Image: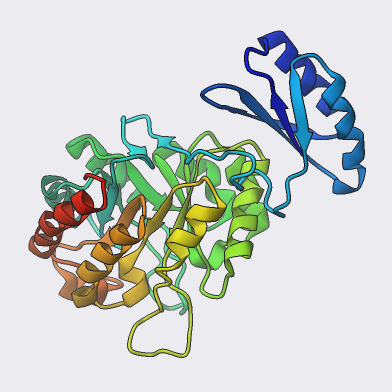
Length: 339
């Protein structure tokens, strides 16, 4: 249910409503609007009729049911688009597009620092890099783990770029959170509910990737797991879905951007690298994603793709990334955004 507070409702009235919601066995989630506050009461839907009585409390305007199965992610609870603020001052959502760029995997200090400096010079505002890598084959490169996290921290100190990196195992959440500015959930973990719950208890933004066979509804329900634990800073990432097509690694569902924009207030970014699997296709998908209304991009860049431990064929070289960013600025301007 949504409890809409009156304009001018006092802090004491808001706290009283929150207290009563808890007494009724529900969890209150406050969304502060520009003119009034809204409280989402989340819990067992079978007893939601008891919440209707909250309309009689001081400061309450009305009580309405949330129709979507995903409650806190829906625009019913928060009609205005959310903007996720990072400690570094970078924002995800709003007028300015965010570009997260870097290698698929952290392989060594020289590789990472060189790539980090190159993507920053080209205009990227977040450094991406995998320290833990879930792979289809158990024999493939799995990442440098904590050593990779330490190298990401070094790159952040060298460039000032905040870092986004994937957490694969629930037992590693605390470790990764000590280093990362944004915690990434990969496509294979989109319905790893114990992991999502733990991430919901962290005070760090979460980048949630859509699974290869995950519907939009399932995707938003996964986001709901994180939001329901108290972490409101969730960013959705469309990274391609599995179809019958073999010309690309996956099929980029570009229509997911406007669909998600209609259904949720959460920011939406696109991963053109994993969706296509071919570096030559990445620039055009970047431009298309911006035209579709995305809030940012997650692009793989490697200073030497031919020697990359994984995903070299889909990684842009620094010069290619710089050229893409130059052209992307013009697309952003047409779309009413800026880099």
